[in-house]
Length: 592
Image (cartoon, rainbow, N blue to C red; front, side, top):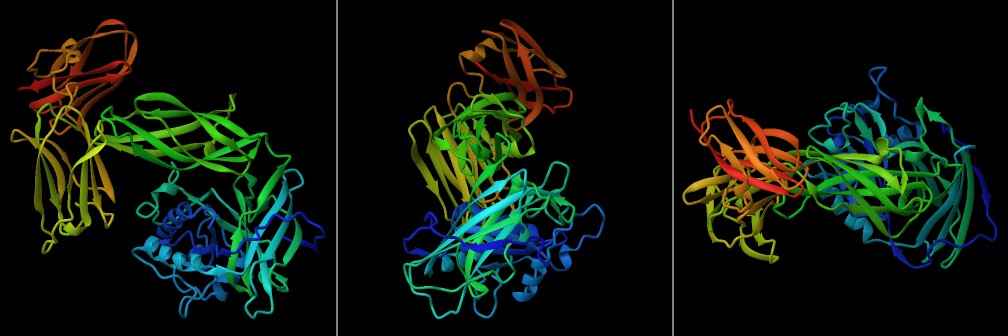
């Protein structure tokens, strides 16, 4: 039984906002899921990737139904709907996760296939849908009043072609909600992006109700070049099944189908928010990016959305890493209006050497006015910086492949000249799970280089098909090794400049270590030009950080810092000091 009841009327003399141009079909993915479905987060991940790939062409509705959607404790939220149960039976869903695309029957089933490679398989089905012509376009505009909780919606259909032998079309309006936080089985292996800090799960695109009747609002098709306009009103509740209906995260999908199946086109309505907060923004879909420099830095990319309120021309973000806090200000190329989104890429910020760095970004101000940051305006992601250094010109790259050599390719680029110097792969396939060393000698000038190694299967070169790795050797000595565990690619920066961590630079002469060789302790002495926040680290011969003193504030003039070495094994190390206007390094030998 529907929770909400529309008031229907045929509108007269309305503004025409639907496109009159012939178009291909747009797609609605209805994913059948549940909080106790172990493989369902894999479906959520595939869906998220495809939504990002096809903005404005693909729309998602996640339907919690069936045995895996039943809460088993009082702490679990009930995301089921009566409409979802009906749809589950109508389209004869047999396995979870399952997805129906445009309610189109592929062969004998409405379910899209896909198991170990859902993202690829579902994408192939979408290509088939996107290639189909649509004889009807759809668009919607409306108003959502936050005080009265009334939604007014006008939907327009324009027929660009002749209707193909049906008796009726059906307009459907679905209401979904993002950021519903509750439990989810087995999310870590399949979709860690939607896991919260306290170990719960961010459910997205959750169907809350079909606002139109389950069979849709019936429209009698008319001829080519005809326009049909329908107006609706709904009073939206404050909650459904004790879950607040949060307008910040509530979305609507409007689509037109032939009979009750075979969707031809879809859209998200353009909404005006009345009595809403003055400015509300959200951040989502954050990913970290390498800076492609030898400055031990990274970048971040994320989606900024103006949810409701004033037009946005400028947003300042705070960027928090273990190195400290920096700021980045985004200046919009064009005004970001309510409901619009933009992809933001930050400037480079300091990051950890050869390690995992957690990056947190918050909205600090909007249009110059302080913004009260909350969960929807904060995003986090993990950054990996892989950094190798040597002052020798002759370097050998060893790509130790796993069994599937045909999956492996790589390129080695000079970042200063922006030229590719060396490439490699694909390699021969091996029998069983063996490894094979592929060596490339290089003669390099002083500079900064980037090595990118790809794996077509997306499981790196050290999974379960042979323990591959990537290493650099100079003068018979290995000075860097990556364990080969990555997904589709890994980026490694190689620094051969005079200021690499080799003790040969003019600045490094200002850094002294006493005693050197050392046993259990040593003292760093260096001269700082001005007050600075300096990160002090000790790296082993592979470039891995083995001792991290964190950020140390130094004053102008001579500074001394004690290094506790009692937990480090004898060998060769590099001490690095990096911060604003400080980039010092020197060799350290530990003996016992």
